[in-house]
Length: 365
Image 1 (cartoon, rainbow, N blue to C red):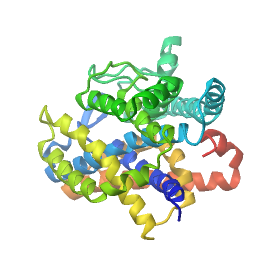
Image 2: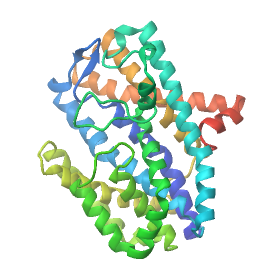
Image 3: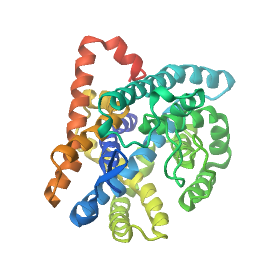
Image 4: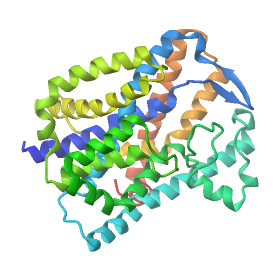
């Protein structure tokens, strides 16, 4: 296959594994499971579970969202000159492919919250304001950034995984600045943004994450300068795998140390290069192939999984409370697999029965 074909297949193949990573992040029980304002389960007494889940969800899977931003930035500028008319056309198309699904899925979760608060109040955390009591401001926050109970965390939309789409829409809105930055400053601009991101020097405003701006710009760099990122990264295959392995082990071992967040961020950058290289190498050698079904289902699974996953974990904890390491690991991995499996089944059924509606709510993906 040509280098362009390999690059395209690498992007297509990565979509589903990265979504699996996102689901694993959200199936990770860190502080506990809260129902009716009471923490009914804590993972503190399960060190094996914490080691496994930290490695999968807080090390490996943390590459997923930055790599999605990278791919989005690359595709936004891919094989197109950039001008005022092109910018307007891209925003018009993204209104259909990004904004419409964003509004739809947040509205779906509003409805699910209402049903849960009405029919299953004992399974809710008690931290969320009843939907029936929403003011106009509450409705706006639900679709942008709900108030977080943790003052150190930025608010999320009510369908919390969609913070990625929210931040992606904002960086697309500022894409002329991104274009000028990567075109004029080239790799030096990437070094500046990368340093700021690693150090965490940025403003905490919902929608304006440095993760979005840095990795979107990183991907845009290759498109703007007409470079094939698979070809450019290929010489780094062995070094990136070796270095990422070391960084991942250190990240897991020193997790919780104040300085470890810098090592963690460096590991994410190296991890992006590592996963791209491994995927391209496997595709090139015929060790794996792209599944159109899995690649196509990735956005649906991503958009739908948040609340069903939280509900699945709470149902299991309430009626089959885990009491051993194996049971807690089973809850962690099993809930993610079940929710992904149901998502794939729903996607497959809708693709056969209501393809036009499915296309609308997934942005034509």
